[in-house]
Structures are given as structure tokens and as C-alpha cells.
Amino acid sequence: MVQNSSTFKAFRIEEIDGIYQGSVQEMDFGTLNNNEVLVKVHYSSLNYKDALSASGNKGVTRNYPHTPGIDAVGIIEKSNSDLYAVGEKVIVTSYDLGMNTDGGFAEYIQVPAEWAVKLPENITMKEAMIYGTAGLTAGMSVLRLTELIKPEDGKIAVSGATGGVGALSVSILSKLGYSVVAITGKETEWDYLMNLGAEEVLLRSEVENFAKKPLLKPLFADAIDTVGGVILENIIKSTNAIGVVTCCGNVASPKLDLTVFPFILRGVTLIGIDSQNYPMKYRKIVWNKLSQEWNPKQLNHTCNEIKLKDVGQKIELMLQGKLKGRTVVTLVE
Image 1: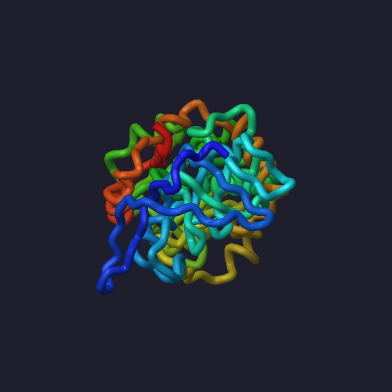
Image 2: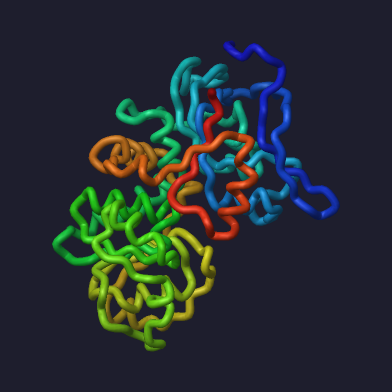
């Protein structure tokens, strides 16, 4: 085993008098159980679920102190499993990582071996975390859309387009030849979205203010929605006949106020995306595609790199809706 210290650094969230506070602390190594691996983390990344965990959302994390971080990539330093050997590079995303199992905002993680995916040869560890759960979620959405829809079928809307899932969805779809309409609440990010590959940008307020009718004029062949609420409602109502909409988030609202008309009069299909418990068979398919034909040339344009000590500040900005793209946490100097 390579580790040469009895402790490691982690960004820990503590509950003190009802207030949740984060700081970098020294942690002791635990005992490695059967079928577990110890991974030296090289990179992690910041997701909205991490921000919720860090602010005390009990729907994400029940017990504190806790280390958030639903994404990690690194090298196995100890293995009690036949699935992986010491020295292999692996990606660990979702499942319970960073929720009720200490996560990737740490120099080491200890997880069940079946949570890990071997790092594809065609991407670096940093690139894997630019993707992270956001990239996996975007990839799952693109996979479902491209099974049913071709570029010539029309425009694809992507909501929350400056966020992690949205930005990567825009980039991947553009590389595959689709015409993308990016929906955003940030008027200042026009150039950023066009550089990612969007052909058109709509303001969130425009979409929110579509007419309040059961069905609207068809505008999109398909869509990837990352926010939920009124935006998702109006996208569904504005989707072409036999169109497909995927949904993966609820930052705007978990509620939908719809009639069945888009589904029974236009045959629109709504597909839910669950990256947390996505079957391993399909995880491997998506990761391989992300490392090869889906790998967008603009990948690094979606990334900001920080160190462990900066995580708390970035979490605050994320909760205020002031981050764009992906934030990658470097754990190895």
C-alpha cells in the first residue's frame, strides 16, 4: 500500500447549533471490508447534490459530520475485491457516494468495488471529472434521445444550459450534428453557449411566459430538461408530434401542472433519467461513448479547477445560481 500517513484530508460538513459549516480536516483511515476498495482520489467535481448535502438537506444526507462529493476518480491503493487490483484507475459516481457514504471531497474514498468503473483509456482522470455525474446524466439523456431521434428531425431544446448537465448536453449534441436551442436564465452567457455549440439561445423568462394553454405551437423536435417545473411543462407542450423529452432535475420545481394532451394528441414521450442507480451495463456504454465519439472539443471550456480549500466558497456560489459549467476539485498536487 502506497499511503504513507495515518490520516488524510477531507472537506467535512458539521452541524453546529443548527448551522452547517464546512472545513478541511484530517481524517483517520477505516478498516477495509470485504469487496471494498480504497481509492486515492486525484479529482472530484462539484454537483448541486453536493451543495444540498453541504447545506444540511436531510433528503440527501441524514447524518453529520459528513464528507460530500458524489464524484471521484483515482487509483486503487488497496483492494479486498476480485473486481479490481491495486494500481487500476477507476471512476466512482453516484450510488450512495457523497450522500450517506463519505464522498469525493477527500484524498481517499473507501467504497464497494461494484460502484467503480474502469477509467476508459481515451480520457484523462481530469476529463472524467469534467464529466462526472453531470456527464453521465447528460450521456444517459443523449443515449435515450439518439435511440429515437435523428439530427434531421429538428431542433433539440436543452434547459439549464449553463449548468453541468446542460452544458455537456449542448456540447455532445452539437458534436453529433444536432441543432441545439439552449435555454438559460443568464443573459450574459450567450457567447459561452454559442461556443459550446448552441445554434440558438432562449431566455428562461421567455419559456416561462409561454401561453398558459394545454398545447402550444410545436417548437422543438425533442428536449433535455434539467430543471423541472414550468420550464419542463412548457417544453413538453411545445414538442413536436412523436417527440421525446428527458428530465433529470427539479431545481425549479418537482411539480408538473399538465394535461395529458401532449401525450395522447401528439404522442410525446417523457423519459425520466436516474443517474444514481443507473445499471452498470449502461454506465460502461455511456462512459465509453463519452471517451470516444461523444467527447466534445469544447470539453475543457466547461471546466473551472479548484483546490479542496476552495470548495466551501464554490458551494455558496452554486446555491446562489452563480456557477456555470463544471467545477473540478484537484486532490493531488
